[in-house]
Amino acid sequence: MSTSPYSNPNQLASLDTLALVLAGGSGTRLRDLTRWHAKPAVPFGGKYKTIDFPLSNCINSGIRRICILTQYKSHSLNSHINRAWHFLRPELNEFVDLLPAQQRIKDSWYLGTADAVHQNMDIILAHNPAYVLILAGDHVYKMNYRRMLREHIESNAEMTIGCIPVPREKAKEFGVMTVDEHNWVHAFTEKPDEPEALPGDSSKALASMGIYVFNTGFLKEALEQDDLKDLSSHDFGKDIIPPLIGKSRVAAHHFMNEGSGEPGYWRDVGTIDSYYQANMELLEITPELNLYDNTWPIWTYQEQLPPCKFVFEDPGRRGMAVDSMVSTGSVISGAMVRHSLISSNTRINSHSLVEDSVILPDVEIGRNCRLHKVMVDTACVIPPGTVIGEDLATDAQHYHVSPQGVVLVSPEMLEARFCKLE
Image 1 (cartoon, rainbow, N blue to C red):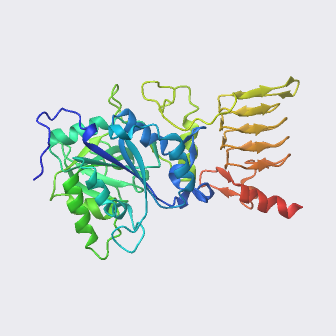
Image 2 (image 1 turned 30 degrees about the vertical axis):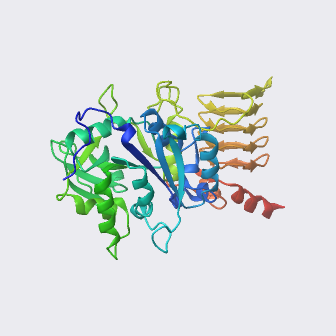
C-alpha cells in the first residue's frame, strides 16, 4: 500500500508532479484537418492550438515539469512547442520536453496510450515524481489540477480519474464510471453501448475526461502488468483501468466550477462537429470558456502580425463583422462577417458574406463569395464567386459534409474541384 510523502495531506503536490501530455493520436475523425498535423496542433479559437489548453492548465496550476509524447505527423506540433513553450527555466527544474516514439524498450512505435507511457518509464523515473498526471493533448477546457491532486492525496488513492456528467447518448464515446458516495470508482466501461445513468438523472452518465493522477510506483506496476498481456491494446480506458477496479484504490474527481459548483466546461474536439461547435461557443455573449480571463491565461505563440482591419464604407460594400471574433493580421475588405470565427492572417474580399463559419489561419476568400456554416482549413484560397453551404447535396460532391451539416473545405478539395473547371 502506497502512502503520501506529505505529512499534511492538504499540502499542494504540484512541485512533486510530472505531467505527461498524450499528443500522438492520428485524429482521423477530424478528416483533412489532421491530414498534415497531429490533433493537438490543430488551430482553435482564432490564435491557439488545442494543446495550449492542457499546457496552460499545467502552468496555471503550478505544474512546470511537463513531457509531451508525440508520434503522428508531429512536425507542426514540435515547431509550435519550440516557439511557444520554451519560456520555462530548466535551472529551476522547469521544462516542457518532447518525447517522440523512440522504440526505447521494444521494436515497435507507440501501440496505445498506455504503451506510450510505458515506453518512457525510464525517463519518468529519472525525474523522481511522487505523482504522474496524464492528460490528453486535444481537449479544450480550463482546469485547476491542484484540486485533483489535493483530493488524490487526501483520499490516499492510488489512481484518480477526472470525470464529468455528459448526455447518455454522447457517453458511448467515452469511458463511463460508477462511483459511490465517497467517490470511489466501482465500475468502469470503455465506450459502452448502454451507458449506466447517473443516480437521479437518467439522461446523463458519468464520463472519464481522460485525465488521470497516478502514484508513480502504482503506475509503473500497472503498465508492466499490461505489457505482459498479448491481447491488450495497451490503452488506459480499455486495458489499464478496468482490471484495477475493485482491486485498487481508484477515486473519481468531479470537475466543477469553483464558484458555482456546476460541472466545468470541457470539450473533446475530436470530430468535425464537436470541433466546430466548440469554436462557435466562443462567440456567445458570455461563453463558458472565457478566453478573456486574466486570472487563468491561455498561453500560446504570439505571431507578430498587425491589428485586424476593416475597410470601405461604401453603399453595399462595407467591411464589418458582428457577433464574431476576428484575429490579428486579418483584413475584412468590403465584406460582411456574421457570427463567425476568423483566425489570424485571413483576408475576406469585397461583396462576400461569411456567416456561421470557422475560418482557420492564412485563408483568402475572393470577391462575391457566400459561405454558410463552413469550416475552411488553413491556407485555403477560395476563388471569387464561390458559394458553399447553401446546397449540401452539391457541396458533398466536392467537400466533406459532417452529420450536422458543417462543410469542411481544404486546399486539396479546392484544387480538385476548380482544376476540373480549367
